[in-house]
Length: 499
Image (tube, rainbow, N blue to C red; front, side, top):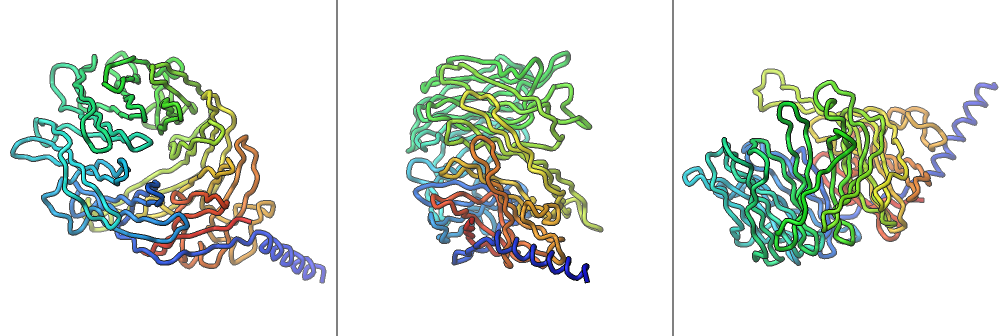
Protein backbone atom coordinates (compact mmCIF):
# COMPACT_ATOMS: atom_id res chain seq x y z
CA UNK A 1 0.00 0.00 0.00
CA UNK A 2 2.80 2.37 0.95
CA UNK A 3 4.56 1.52 -2.34
CA UNK A 4 1.43 2.35 -4.34
CA UNK A 5 1.06 5.63 -2.46
CA UNK A 6 4.69 6.55 -3.09
CA UNK A 7 4.33 5.77 -6.79
CA UNK A 8 1.17 7.89 -6.97
CA UNK A 9 2.91 10.82 -5.28
CA UNK A 10 5.85 10.48 -7.67
CA UNK A 11 3.50 10.58 -10.68
CA UNK A 12 1.72 13.65 -9.27
CA UNK A 13 5.08 15.38 -8.65
CA UNK A 14 6.29 14.71 -12.19
CA UNK A 15 2.98 15.81 -13.66
CA UNK A 16 3.28 19.07 -11.72
CA UNK A 17 6.79 19.52 -13.06
CA UNK A 18 5.46 19.13 -16.58
CA UNK A 19 2.87 21.82 -15.99
CA UNK A 20 5.50 24.21 -14.60
CA UNK A 21 7.93 23.85 -17.48
CA UNK A 22 5.53 23.51 -20.42
CA UNK A 23 6.88 25.52 -23.34
CA UNK A 24 4.82 27.02 -26.11
CA UNK A 25 6.24 26.03 -29.50
CA UNK A 26 4.81 27.69 -32.60
CA UNK A 27 5.50 26.49 -36.16
CA UNK A 28 5.37 29.45 -38.56
CA UNK A 29 4.09 28.55 -42.04
CA UNK A 30 4.93 28.01 -44.88
CA UNK A 31 7.68 25.37 -44.89
CA UNK A 32 10.82 24.89 -46.96
CA UNK A 33 12.54 21.77 -48.28
CA UNK A 34 16.20 21.10 -47.48
CA UNK A 35 17.96 20.47 -50.79
CA UNK A 36 21.52 20.89 -49.56
CA UNK A 37 22.32 17.57 -47.88
CA UNK A 38 24.54 17.18 -44.79
CA UNK A 39 25.01 20.95 -44.59
CA UNK A 40 27.05 23.34 -42.55
CA UNK A 41 24.63 25.99 -41.29
CA UNK A 42 25.27 29.72 -40.82
CA UNK A 43 22.96 32.71 -40.37
CA UNK A 44 23.07 36.45 -41.03
CA UNK A 45 20.72 39.44 -41.24
CA UNK A 46 20.41 41.91 -44.13
CA UNK A 47 17.81 44.51 -45.16
CA UNK A 48 15.54 43.52 -42.26
CA UNK A 49 15.51 39.89 -43.37
CA UNK A 50 17.04 36.89 -41.65
CA UNK A 51 18.96 34.37 -43.77
CA UNK A 52 19.97 30.77 -43.19
CA UNK A 53 22.79 29.54 -45.44
CA UNK A 54 23.28 25.80 -45.97
CA UNK A 55 26.57 24.62 -47.52
CA UNK A 56 27.37 21.01 -48.42
CA UNK A 57 29.72 19.18 -50.73
CA UNK A 58 28.27 18.27 -54.11
CA UNK A 59 29.09 14.57 -54.37
CA UNK A 60 28.90 14.74 -58.18
CA UNK A 61 31.46 17.51 -58.36
CA UNK A 62 34.00 17.76 -55.55
CA UNK A 63 35.02 21.23 -56.68
CA UNK A 64 31.52 22.64 -56.17
CA UNK A 65 29.34 23.17 -53.12
CA UNK A 66 25.57 22.93 -52.99
CA UNK A 67 24.49 26.33 -51.65
CA UNK A 68 20.95 26.83 -50.36
CA UNK A 69 19.85 30.24 -49.09
CA UNK A 70 16.56 30.66 -47.22
CA UNK A 71 15.15 34.02 -46.14
CA UNK A 72 12.67 34.86 -43.38
CA UNK A 73 10.82 37.94 -42.16
CA UNK A 74 11.68 39.32 -38.69
CA UNK A 75 8.70 37.46 -37.21
CA UNK A 76 9.80 34.15 -38.75
CA UNK A 77 7.58 33.89 -41.81
CA UNK A 78 9.27 32.00 -44.64
CA UNK A 79 9.93 34.23 -47.65
CA UNK A 80 12.15 32.53 -50.25
CA UNK A 81 14.18 29.33 -50.53
CA UNK A 82 16.75 29.14 -53.31
CA UNK A 83 19.54 26.90 -54.56
CA UNK A 84 22.26 29.39 -55.38
CA UNK A 85 24.62 26.66 -56.56
CA UNK A 86 24.10 22.96 -57.02
CA UNK A 87 22.24 20.67 -59.44
CA UNK A 88 21.54 22.53 -62.65
CA UNK A 89 24.31 25.09 -62.20
CA UNK A 90 26.04 25.88 -65.48
CA UNK A 91 29.20 23.75 -65.57
CA UNK A 92 31.05 26.70 -67.11
CA UNK A 93 30.53 28.81 -63.99
CA UNK A 94 33.45 29.20 -61.57
CA UNK A 95 33.14 26.46 -58.98
CA UNK A 96 35.07 27.60 -55.89
CA UNK A 97 32.72 29.25 -53.38
CA UNK A 98 34.25 32.33 -51.71
CA UNK A 99 31.22 33.46 -49.71
CA UNK A 100 27.93 35.34 -49.71
CA UNK A 101 28.05 38.78 -48.08
CA UNK A 102 25.80 41.83 -47.73
CA UNK A 103 27.63 44.48 -49.79
CA UNK A 104 25.87 47.83 -49.59
CA UNK A 105 22.18 47.08 -50.10
CA UNK A 106 22.87 44.02 -52.27
CA UNK A 107 23.59 40.42 -51.32
CA UNK A 108 26.68 39.43 -53.30
CA UNK A 109 28.02 35.98 -54.17
CA UNK A 110 31.77 35.57 -54.68
CA UNK A 111 33.17 32.60 -56.62
CA UNK A 112 36.45 31.89 -58.34
CA UNK A 113 37.51 29.45 -61.02
CA UNK A 114 40.69 28.18 -62.65
CA UNK A 115 41.17 28.06 -66.41
CA UNK A 116 43.47 25.18 -67.26
CA UNK A 117 44.41 26.51 -70.72
CA UNK A 118 45.55 29.94 -69.53
CA UNK A 119 46.52 28.84 -65.98
CA UNK A 120 44.65 31.85 -64.63
CA UNK A 121 42.41 31.87 -61.55
CA UNK A 122 39.70 34.57 -61.61
CA UNK A 123 37.45 35.89 -58.83
CA UNK A 124 33.93 36.99 -59.80
CA UNK A 125 31.13 38.77 -57.93
CA UNK A 126 27.44 38.15 -58.65
CA UNK A 127 24.59 40.31 -57.35
CA UNK A 128 22.21 37.85 -55.73
CA UNK A 129 18.44 37.98 -55.35
CA UNK A 130 16.32 36.18 -52.76
CA UNK A 131 15.05 33.74 -55.38
CA UNK A 132 18.63 32.60 -56.00
CA UNK A 133 18.97 34.28 -59.38
CA UNK A 134 22.39 35.74 -60.11
CA UNK A 135 23.02 38.99 -61.90
CA UNK A 136 25.80 39.49 -64.42
CA UNK A 137 29.18 38.40 -63.12
CA UNK A 138 31.83 41.02 -62.48
CA UNK A 139 35.51 40.19 -62.62
CA UNK A 140 37.22 41.24 -59.40
CA UNK A 141 40.79 40.03 -59.87
CA UNK A 142 43.05 37.36 -61.33
CA UNK A 143 46.03 35.24 -60.32
CA UNK A 144 48.54 33.84 -62.79
CA UNK A 145 48.95 30.26 -61.61
CA UNK A 146 51.65 27.68 -62.18
CA UNK A 147 49.21 24.79 -62.46
CA UNK A 148 45.90 23.64 -61.03
CA UNK A 149 47.53 22.44 -57.80
CA UNK A 150 49.51 25.68 -57.48
CA UNK A 151 47.04 28.23 -58.83
CA UNK A 152 46.78 30.66 -55.91
CA UNK A 153 43.72 31.36 -53.76
CA UNK A 154 41.28 34.19 -53.02
CA UNK A 155 39.94 35.17 -49.60
CA UNK A 156 37.12 37.69 -49.25
CA UNK A 157 35.83 39.65 -46.27
CA UNK A 158 33.35 42.53 -45.89
CA UNK A 159 33.26 45.27 -43.26
CA UNK A 160 30.51 45.12 -40.62
CA UNK A 161 28.58 47.95 -42.30
CA UNK A 162 28.85 46.32 -45.74
CA UNK A 163 30.56 49.37 -47.28
CA UNK A 164 34.07 47.93 -47.78
CA UNK A 165 35.32 44.67 -49.31
CA UNK A 166 38.82 43.28 -48.85
CA UNK A 167 40.22 40.60 -51.17
CA UNK A 168 43.46 38.79 -50.37
CA UNK A 169 45.10 37.12 -53.35
CA UNK A 170 47.52 34.43 -52.17
CA UNK A 171 50.00 34.14 -55.03
CA UNK A 172 51.29 30.69 -56.04
CA UNK A 173 54.04 29.09 -54.01
CA UNK A 174 57.54 29.75 -55.34
CA UNK A 175 60.32 27.24 -54.81
CA UNK A 176 62.70 30.06 -54.03
CA UNK A 177 61.92 33.47 -52.62
CA UNK A 178 59.57 34.99 -50.11
CA UNK A 179 55.81 34.67 -49.85
CA UNK A 180 53.74 37.23 -51.79
CA UNK A 181 50.13 38.38 -51.69
CA UNK A 182 48.07 41.12 -53.33
CA UNK A 183 45.60 43.11 -51.21
CA UNK A 184 42.64 44.96 -52.69
CA UNK A 185 40.06 47.13 -50.96
CA UNK A 186 36.81 47.95 -52.80
CA UNK A 187 33.83 50.15 -52.03
CA UNK A 188 30.22 48.92 -51.92
CA UNK A 189 30.02 49.21 -55.72
CA UNK A 190 33.16 47.03 -56.02
CA UNK A 191 35.23 49.91 -57.31
CA UNK A 192 38.89 49.83 -56.27
CA UNK A 193 39.89 52.00 -53.32
CA UNK A 194 43.41 50.64 -52.87
CA UNK A 195 45.64 47.87 -54.18
CA UNK A 196 49.05 46.71 -53.03
CA UNK A 197 51.38 43.78 -53.66
CA UNK A 198 53.06 42.67 -50.45
CA UNK A 199 56.15 40.53 -50.02
CA UNK A 200 56.34 39.05 -46.55
CA UNK A 201 59.79 38.60 -44.98
CA UNK A 202 59.09 34.87 -44.78
CA UNK A 203 59.96 32.02 -47.11
CA UNK A 204 57.23 31.04 -49.57
CA UNK A 205 55.20 28.11 -48.26
CA UNK A 206 52.74 25.68 -49.84
CA UNK A 207 50.53 25.87 -46.76
CA UNK A 208 50.49 29.66 -46.30
CA UNK A 209 47.73 30.73 -43.92
CA UNK A 210 46.64 34.37 -43.95
CA UNK A 211 43.29 35.78 -42.82
CA UNK A 212 42.34 39.32 -43.86
CA UNK A 213 39.60 41.54 -42.38
CA UNK A 214 38.51 45.15 -42.98
CA UNK A 215 36.77 47.51 -40.57
CA UNK A 216 34.25 50.23 -41.39
CA UNK A 217 37.00 52.86 -41.73
CA UNK A 218 38.87 50.73 -44.28
CA UNK A 219 41.75 49.58 -42.05
CA UNK A 220 42.87 46.10 -43.04
CA UNK A 221 44.18 43.50 -40.59
CA UNK A 222 45.97 40.29 -41.53
CA UNK A 223 46.49 37.48 -39.05
CA UNK A 224 49.34 35.40 -40.40
CA UNK A 225 50.48 32.02 -39.12
CA UNK A 226 54.20 31.37 -39.60
CA UNK A 227 54.82 27.66 -39.62
CA UNK A 228 57.77 26.20 -37.78
CA UNK A 229 61.08 25.49 -39.43
CA UNK A 230 63.67 23.21 -37.90
CA UNK A 231 64.67 24.51 -34.49
CA UNK A 232 61.76 27.01 -34.31
CA UNK A 233 58.10 27.00 -33.27
CA UNK A 234 54.93 28.19 -34.94
CA UNK A 235 54.26 31.91 -34.55
CA UNK A 236 51.58 34.42 -35.46
CA UNK A 237 51.96 37.97 -36.69
CA UNK A 238 49.33 40.66 -37.10
CA UNK A 239 49.76 43.20 -39.90
CA UNK A 240 47.79 46.44 -39.60
CA UNK A 241 47.26 48.62 -42.69
CA UNK A 242 45.87 52.11 -43.25
CA UNK A 243 42.90 52.47 -45.66
CA UNK A 244 45.40 53.20 -48.48
CA UNK A 245 47.16 49.90 -47.53
CA UNK A 246 50.23 51.59 -46.09
CA UNK A 247 51.65 49.23 -43.49
CA UNK A 248 51.20 50.76 -40.03
CA UNK A 249 52.64 48.05 -37.85
CA UNK A 250 53.72 44.40 -37.74
CA UNK A 251 52.84 43.02 -34.31
CA UNK A 252 53.77 39.61 -32.88
CA UNK A 253 50.75 37.82 -31.41
CA UNK A 254 52.42 36.37 -28.35
CA UNK A 255 50.49 34.05 -26.06
CA UNK A 256 52.71 33.41 -23.09
CA UNK A 257 56.14 32.26 -24.18
CA UNK A 258 55.50 29.64 -26.85
CA UNK A 259 51.72 29.53 -27.16
CA UNK A 260 49.95 29.19 -30.51
CA UNK A 261 46.25 29.50 -31.31
CA UNK A 262 44.38 26.27 -32.02
CA UNK A 263 41.03 27.83 -33.00
CA UNK A 264 39.62 31.35 -32.96
CA UNK A 265 36.86 33.64 -34.23
CA UNK A 266 37.00 37.36 -35.01
CA UNK A 267 34.79 40.43 -34.76
CA UNK A 268 35.11 44.23 -34.66
CA UNK A 269 34.10 46.52 -31.82
CA UNK A 270 32.41 49.91 -32.29
CA UNK A 271 35.80 51.67 -32.40
CA UNK A 272 37.04 49.53 -35.29
CA UNK A 273 39.40 47.45 -33.17
CA UNK A 274 39.83 43.86 -34.29
CA UNK A 275 38.87 41.41 -31.54
CA UNK A 276 39.73 37.75 -31.83
CA UNK A 277 39.40 35.06 -29.24
CA UNK A 278 39.55 31.30 -28.89
CA UNK A 279 41.94 28.67 -27.59
CA UNK A 280 45.70 28.31 -27.46
CA UNK A 281 48.19 25.54 -26.80
CA UNK A 282 51.81 25.05 -25.88
CA UNK A 283 53.39 24.38 -29.29
CA UNK A 284 54.95 21.18 -28.02
CA UNK A 285 51.51 19.77 -27.38
CA UNK A 286 50.06 20.45 -30.83
CA UNK A 287 49.65 17.23 -32.80
CA UNK A 288 48.42 13.68 -32.31
CA UNK A 289 47.63 12.24 -28.89
CA UNK A 290 48.02 15.51 -27.04
CA UNK A 291 46.30 16.76 -23.91
CA UNK A 292 44.38 19.56 -25.59
CA UNK A 293 44.49 23.37 -25.53
CA UNK A 294 46.16 25.03 -22.57
CA UNK A 295 43.37 27.54 -22.20
CA UNK A 296 41.46 30.43 -23.72
CA UNK A 297 42.63 33.84 -24.94
CA UNK A 298 41.12 37.14 -25.99
CA UNK A 299 43.10 39.68 -28.04
CA UNK A 300 42.31 43.15 -29.31
CA UNK A 301 44.36 45.19 -31.79
CA UNK A 302 43.71 48.83 -32.64
CA UNK A 303 43.95 50.46 -36.10
CA UNK A 304 47.31 51.79 -34.84
CA UNK A 305 48.56 48.24 -34.35
CA UNK A 306 48.52 48.32 -30.54
CA UNK A 307 47.79 44.86 -29.13
CA UNK A 308 46.16 43.86 -25.85
CA UNK A 309 45.94 40.15 -25.10
CA UNK A 310 45.09 38.05 -22.07
CA UNK A 311 45.02 34.31 -21.46
CA UNK A 312 43.29 32.03 -19.00
CA UNK A 313 44.64 28.57 -18.24
CA UNK A 314 41.87 25.95 -18.35
CA UNK A 315 41.74 22.17 -18.40
CA UNK A 316 40.31 21.45 -21.85
CA UNK A 317 39.52 18.46 -24.04
CA UNK A 318 41.55 17.84 -27.20
CA UNK A 319 38.60 18.25 -29.56
CA UNK A 320 37.13 21.45 -28.11
CA UNK A 321 36.89 24.35 -30.57
CA UNK A 322 35.35 27.77 -30.53
CA UNK A 323 32.10 27.93 -32.51
CA UNK A 324 30.92 31.48 -31.73
CA UNK A 325 32.34 34.82 -30.59
CA UNK A 326 29.40 36.99 -29.49
CA UNK A 327 29.66 40.66 -28.54
CA UNK A 328 27.97 41.31 -25.18
CA UNK A 329 25.81 44.37 -24.59
CA UNK A 330 28.20 45.59 -21.86
CA UNK A 331 31.18 45.77 -24.25
CA UNK A 332 32.56 42.33 -23.44
CA UNK A 333 32.54 39.10 -25.41
CA UNK A 334 31.15 35.61 -25.01
CA UNK A 335 33.06 32.56 -26.28
CA UNK A 336 30.86 29.58 -27.10
CA UNK A 337 32.75 26.32 -27.63
CA UNK A 338 31.94 22.62 -27.86
CA UNK A 339 33.59 19.26 -28.09
CA UNK A 340 32.93 17.64 -31.44
CA UNK A 341 34.59 14.67 -33.15
CA UNK A 342 34.12 13.21 -36.61
CA UNK A 343 34.80 9.69 -37.83
CA UNK A 344 34.37 8.53 -41.42
CA UNK A 345 33.64 4.89 -42.14
CA UNK A 346 33.48 3.38 -45.61
CA UNK A 347 30.20 1.72 -46.46
CA UNK A 348 30.47 -2.06 -46.88
CA UNK A 349 31.37 -2.92 -50.46
CA UNK A 350 31.52 0.75 -51.40
CA UNK A 351 34.13 2.98 -52.95
CA UNK A 352 36.16 5.59 -51.05
CA UNK A 353 33.49 8.13 -52.01
CA UNK A 354 30.74 6.14 -50.28
CA UNK A 355 31.23 6.71 -46.58
CA UNK A 356 29.23 7.29 -43.45
CA UNK A 357 30.31 10.23 -41.31
CA UNK A 358 29.69 9.86 -37.58
CA UNK A 359 29.68 13.03 -35.48
CA UNK A 360 30.01 12.89 -31.71
CA UNK A 361 29.21 15.95 -29.60
CA UNK A 362 29.86 16.27 -25.90
CA UNK A 363 30.12 19.04 -23.32
CA UNK A 364 30.18 22.72 -24.16
CA UNK A 365 32.03 25.66 -22.64
CA UNK A 366 31.01 29.30 -22.12
CA UNK A 367 33.59 32.00 -21.35
CA UNK A 368 33.01 35.71 -20.78
CA UNK A 369 35.76 38.25 -21.49
CA UNK A 370 35.42 41.93 -20.63
CA UNK A 371 36.03 44.88 -22.93
CA UNK A 372 39.57 44.93 -21.48
CA UNK A 373 40.04 41.33 -22.78
CA UNK A 374 40.28 39.96 -19.22
CA UNK A 375 38.34 36.79 -18.39
CA UNK A 376 35.35 37.35 -16.12
CA UNK A 377 33.85 33.86 -15.80
CA UNK A 378 33.51 30.45 -17.42
CA UNK A 379 30.87 27.72 -17.26
CA UNK A 380 30.86 24.11 -18.44
CA UNK A 381 27.65 22.91 -20.08
CA UNK A 382 27.71 19.25 -19.17
CA UNK A 383 25.76 16.88 -21.37
CA UNK A 384 25.83 13.28 -22.45
CA UNK A 385 27.67 12.06 -25.51
CA UNK A 386 25.47 12.21 -28.61
CA UNK A 387 26.32 10.53 -31.90
CA UNK A 388 24.68 11.31 -35.22
CA UNK A 389 25.37 10.13 -38.76
CA UNK A 390 25.71 11.99 -42.05
CA UNK A 391 24.24 15.28 -40.87
CA UNK A 392 27.20 17.33 -39.58
CA UNK A 393 25.58 16.87 -36.15
CA UNK A 394 23.27 19.68 -37.17
CA UNK A 395 20.65 18.90 -34.52
CA UNK A 396 23.13 18.08 -31.75
CA UNK A 397 25.13 21.29 -31.78
CA UNK A 398 25.36 23.73 -28.91
CA UNK A 399 24.64 27.32 -29.83
CA UNK A 400 23.94 30.63 -28.12
CA UNK A 401 22.52 34.07 -28.76
CA UNK A 402 22.62 37.35 -26.84
CA UNK A 403 19.19 38.74 -26.04
CA UNK A 404 18.17 42.41 -26.00
CA UNK A 405 18.18 42.09 -22.20
CA UNK A 406 21.93 41.34 -22.34
CA UNK A 407 21.44 37.77 -21.16
CA UNK A 408 23.05 34.80 -22.90
CA UNK A 409 20.59 32.16 -24.16
CA UNK A 410 22.15 28.74 -24.73
CA UNK A 411 20.31 25.96 -26.55
CA UNK A 412 21.50 22.39 -26.97
CA UNK A 413 20.32 18.80 -27.19
CA UNK A 414 20.87 16.29 -24.39
CA UNK A 415 19.55 13.06 -22.93
CA UNK A 416 16.62 14.10 -20.79
CA UNK A 417 17.40 11.36 -18.29
CA UNK A 418 20.77 12.94 -17.50
CA UNK A 419 19.01 15.89 -15.83
CA UNK A 420 17.40 15.66 -12.41
CA UNK A 421 14.18 17.07 -10.99
CA UNK A 422 15.89 20.32 -10.05
CA UNK A 423 16.32 20.92 -13.76
CA UNK A 424 12.64 20.09 -14.21
CA UNK A 425 13.23 17.07 -16.39
CA UNK A 426 10.82 14.14 -16.45
CA UNK A 427 12.75 11.05 -15.37
CA UNK A 428 10.02 8.41 -15.60
CA UNK A 429 9.55 6.13 -18.65
CA UNK A 430 8.82 6.41 -21.48
CA UNK A 431 10.46 9.83 -21.87
CA UNK A 432 13.62 9.03 -19.90
CA UNK A 433 15.34 7.75 -23.04
CA UNK A 434 14.40 10.76 -25.14
CA UNK A 435 16.81 13.36 -26.37
CA UNK A 436 15.41 16.80 -25.84
CA UNK A 437 16.44 20.41 -26.21
CA UNK A 438 17.55 22.36 -23.17
CA UNK A 439 17.64 26.15 -22.83
CA UNK A 440 19.88 27.75 -20.23
CA UNK A 441 19.88 31.49 -19.62
CA UNK A 442 22.75 33.41 -17.97
CA UNK A 443 23.06 37.05 -17.07
CA UNK A 444 26.17 38.97 -18.28
CA UNK A 445 27.90 38.18 -14.97
CA UNK A 446 27.51 34.43 -15.45
CA UNK A 447 24.67 33.94 -13.00
CA UNK A 448 22.36 31.09 -14.14
CA UNK A 449 18.85 32.48 -14.43
CA UNK A 450 16.89 29.61 -15.93
CA UNK A 451 17.34 26.06 -17.14
CA UNK A 452 14.37 24.60 -18.97
CA UNK A 453 13.48 21.57 -21.01
CA UNK A 454 11.57 22.21 -24.21
CA UNK A 455 8.80 19.65 -24.17
CA UNK A 456 6.44 19.60 -27.14
CA UNK A 457 5.02 16.46 -28.70
CA UNK A 458 6.32 17.57 -32.11
CA UNK A 459 9.90 18.25 -30.94
CA UNK A 460 12.45 15.54 -30.14
CA UNK A 461 11.35 12.13 -28.94
CA UNK A 462 12.10 8.58 -30.06
CA UNK A 463 10.02 8.48 -33.26
CA UNK A 464 11.76 11.06 -35.41
CA UNK A 465 9.57 14.12 -34.97
CA UNK A 466 10.94 17.59 -35.63
CA UNK A 467 14.43 18.50 -34.43
CA UNK A 468 15.70 21.96 -33.66
CA UNK A 469 18.69 23.50 -35.43
CA UNK A 470 20.30 25.29 -32.45
CA UNK A 471 22.67 27.36 -34.60
CA UNK A 472 19.72 29.09 -36.35
CA UNK A 473 18.11 30.50 -33.20
CA UNK A 474 18.13 34.14 -32.15
CA UNK A 475 16.32 36.08 -29.43
CA UNK A 476 13.55 38.47 -30.44
CA UNK A 477 12.90 41.80 -28.65
CA UNK A 478 9.94 40.07 -27.01
CA UNK A 479 12.28 37.49 -25.44
CA UNK A 480 10.98 34.69 -27.64
CA UNK A 481 13.42 32.41 -29.46
CA UNK A 482 13.10 32.09 -33.22
CA UNK A 483 14.89 29.58 -35.44
CA UNK A 484 14.39 26.56 -37.69
CA UNK A 485 13.40 22.95 -37.05
CA UNK A 486 13.60 20.06 -39.48
CA UNK A 487 12.07 16.64 -40.17
CA UNK A 488 13.84 14.57 -42.81
CA UNK A 489 14.06 17.21 -45.60
CA UNK A 490 11.32 19.49 -44.31
CA UNK A 491 12.26 22.82 -42.71
CA UNK A 492 9.88 24.91 -40.61
CA UNK A 493 10.40 28.25 -38.90
CA UNK A 494 9.97 27.70 -35.14
CA UNK A 495 9.15 30.17 -32.37
CA UNK A 496 9.64 29.20 -28.72
CA UNK A 497 7.88 31.20 -26.03
CA UNK A 498 9.78 30.97 -22.75
CA UNK A 499 7.83 31.06 -19.51
